[in-house]
Length: 194
Image 1: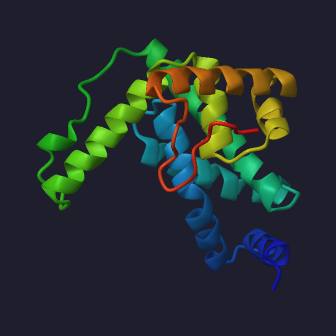
Image 2 (image 1 turned 30 degrees about the vertical axis):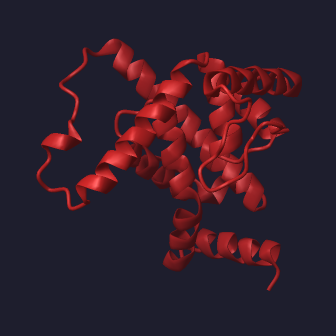
């Protein structure tokens, strides 16, 4: 079965409430949504991801389109949830942040924990050098894998503005990395993302 046909079948099955289809959609999209939420500074990215999919699955009857349109639909909801969280945090004082190092329920090795923490800290450090707009555009383009027109529609910008923010953001990251190339873990360098 062709990938587009398989995607159409999964979406059609999800619309009729078939659990296996929801599981497929979750498995395919939730890691990217969680990464987007983390990159946008969400306090509880996993909880936000769950909220996004609950909203998407609840509103599935009003959705029409193919797999790419569904991906855009899901990230539109994620974007709105991140904005809502920022507004809530601005209105409420901060609580004590969760420190994973103090949580005895973890079962990962110390080595894995250190490597993950170093990678996360480095990523957060690199993202901190970007403007909010640049960070948002790069996360939507690279993590969410949305097209320039989809990002433009989602953020209310023109495609040219999205491209400019992307280019300036990548320039900042290149300078910060020092060698003119920003590597994506598990993928090629993104020196020329279009």
